[in-house]
Image 1 (tube, one colour):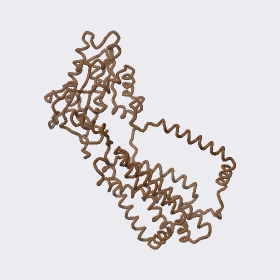
Image 2 (tube, one colour):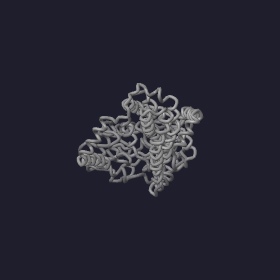
Image 3 (cartoon, one colour):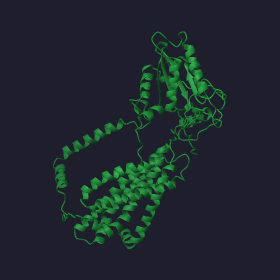
Image 4 (spheres, helix red, strand yellow):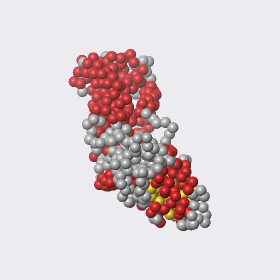
Length: 482
């Protein structure tokens, strides 16, 4: 560590200019990083591979369906006079108005598992035409309106995973910059309390340089990552927030030690060398172990986690490199001027932490019991966390789609959603002609290319020469990810 500190201090101009160049490039590249990331999750498992093959052969039958729940009034069932004709009319309207959708219902299949409450309740499930798409909430609303028109005396609800997600979304999306600014402001308050001087800004400057460098590395790596392990947009948030915390932590260790050496009367450069010698080893070892620990995530057969593992290899290492090279340069140039107002403690230990350590040693058994109780409570909360996909009930609780989910579960029809899927083989759905109002449903929930030529499968297949659809909801198709 002595050789490194000597080299950095001898070549402080070169080191400073290099980091300045990297920071400028990072600022220029940062807006383009999100465009190089790809949404979705890919799994390296036989089940996921089978699901992908099914989607390739049968299109959107593996997607989450949109569901219309129909509850008939008391005294009527799906076999009562006039009801089968109404249900059939609804299916015909869906098939003619939205030829891209695939529907499964009691009227089209005669499957009794789609009926409950003694025949009073049934569901209509609609599937998107292609894999990697979803049925958007607008289409669900139109389908519910069509069901109310076909069965005016019935109670109709609509639900679906995509609709529930949109119902629980906030009014605005948080950006990486917003999250970073919030984290930096909170860190500045803590640093101001710790240093009580303008030195509080120095760890933040190191963090900004580190985060911009990490963003630059992620952008470069996105071009060499294999198609099976793309960087998910979540990686950008993890890099920003984890990089912010680690950079401040490592800088704090060295700056504190430098301050103590200065208080002991050493010249500035000697204080930097002493701080690097004593705290630099801790920073280097911490960065190495944290990098290897995060990199171990590449063994998990999930593309999102593997991407975090690859990015994690560079998060602590970049923070370490900045703390061990740029920070000594900054301390040598502006450190003494930033340490104002300076509180001369003459090397005395903090009264609070002295009292705390004496109390812990004096009551060591009680302190150990209390610490274990706190850790046990946190561990108990941790084991209840759901780290898998969120349940449908957790996505929204107040929207009309959430009410539809509760009605679906109350009618006992939720098992039918998982058990019943379109089975018949239909011809491919041709792409819409120019000027056509054909329904297009697309929502980026999983990665992979959209297939407009995927064979369509429905309980009822619609003709490509259907009349112009009444449901006209168009969204941008997903771009291929491989």
